Image 1 (cartoon, one colour):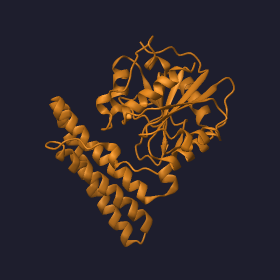
Image 2 (cartoon, one colour; image 1 turned 45 degrees about the horizontal axis):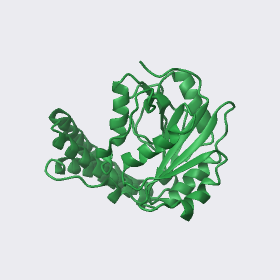
Image 3 (cartoon, rainbow, N blue to C red; image 1 turned 180 degrees about the horizontal axis):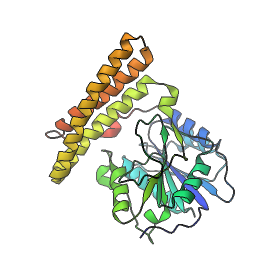
Image 4 (cartoon, rainbow, N blue to C red; image 1 turned 120 degrees about the vertical axis):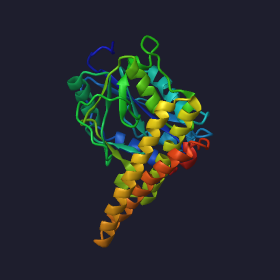
Length: 310
């Protein structure tokens, strides 16, 4: 049985940040330009996962630009799950009925909040995954999700409240990634329903900036995540899922071959920028395949060691 379908009265946006002050500044600056929605309050909860608190260094001034209530917490323990759990605890201190995770390298569009409210009203569900500009994945509006990443993902308070499911992110995923999939799949397995909506749009800050360096870093992170997934499944003895992950790795290899052909066509036709971007995409898919098979014999690589800070 899912959460109640009552109207939204308040939203808390949760942002976890680690060694990316410039990206966080852009994210929060974009949030300050969001259009308000009558009858809907908005709060921000920022978790600082740096080894030492950066509140006085720069986060305090960034929060000051927001025309909304804000809260802050320093979570010293390094890792995705620990930071996200800290954000949940902050959000639970607010009266909000919807909590939304946003990555610190994403930018809000002015209509994000109104799009989110419209999504819940129209789709009548427990969670919403919104579009990220530049994301190549094609989804149907209203599509029911089997799992979800946390970038531009929101859910009813019921997911994490003591009166509801009381979910938290598993600390075992702290340095690995895939904590978001495990969290969402746990909620969906207990009857909660999340859908994709085209309304609540955010912008991929790296793609917007056009930085090839940042795109290369995202590609490296994706390759490490594919490796870590296989390592985790192998160590857990989940051999059926492991087979599926290896088949997915093979599919990445096929995609890499196709991207190689497309990139060569762009090179020959002197489409230099498109050629460089396709080369990065080809490298990513090829290394996701290699990483998957390396994961059969080698150990985890902490994803934050690869992830670029800026």
